[in-house]
Length: 247
Ligand code: ADP
Image (cartoon, rainbow, N blue to C red; front, side, top):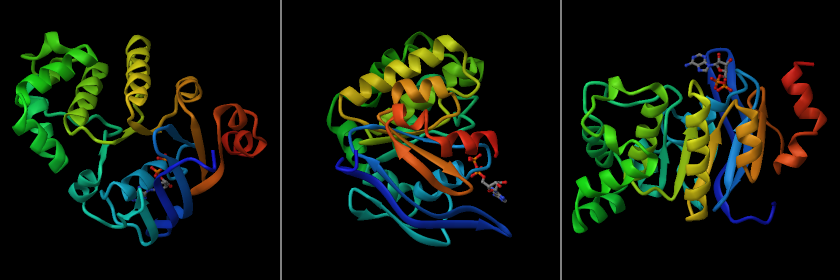
């Protein structure tokens, strides 16, 4: 997998909060066209890493590039325009807007390419309906988002990300708090979208999901990668077992 085409890469990326170094000189490569997973024990820096590379927070030092383009410390909308869409650990939808309204708001926050495509083609509403159908919540288009189950809200958030037609999709704990049936649906969607060419970077605690979906796994411990490779190798790596057992 070392020969894979490069997607997101970081070199010695570092971010501290007061005395806590959350991400500590992390040098990481994710692969274009693959399902990449970032795993690690609680507090190992996964969310901070994610937030640094999507522009939610600025790293203290180090670099991040996306397909060779420097994205270090760039604003979230610039990073979205470079082709990266993301979801949030605690699902971000507008609770008092309907499902369809959420979709129409989502496209405003995404890439210029997607905005142009949606104004040129059949319009946002048709695209939104198509994507809601795809994630299986089209029957809820007039429901307020707050009346959806948490798993359905996560599907709505994913559909909103897809409104931007991002080349790469970052998902922060897509299975977290979601019932098993919907976890299965999210997994199937990831596989289908990947087969259509989307690259994924997924932070996830659910090991069954990570191991069954991913092509490439990066393991964080104390703010930096300690192992990377295919799931079959990661599963039996003693450093990974040690990190999880807290030895
Ligand atoms: P993970 O996502 O792997 O659970 P985090 O990135 O959330 O890890 O956290 C890594 C470390 O940084 C933890 O020790 C956490 O307490 C600390 N941390 C994260 N965000 C902040 C913040 N905004 N302020 C202070 N400390 C933080």
